[in-house]
Image (cartoon, rainbow, N blue to C red):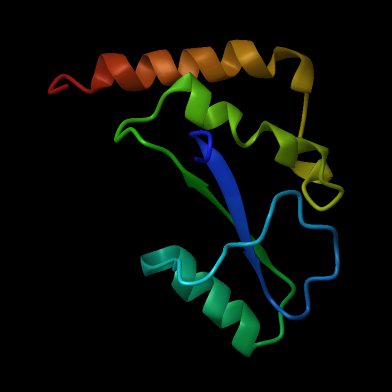
Length: 105
């Protein structure tokens, strides 16, 4: 049994950097906008990687967001990362805000 949440990745042929989690196993699929963007990148030979989080809950929570933390060490994403030292605090605020704004759960 897999722990929940967990990440899987799909990448284009041109993406040469290290993938930070296991690749998505067959016969699993990705659909909708993420699949369209990755397909576009593959067709136009744009290096790209898609990280998909699988979880057993329907709403966003801190544990699900923290599944993406290992990606912050990626050299590809390094230019987007500002200050990781406060990441847990910011993730908690985000998850709390999501719970407050979701009045129907």
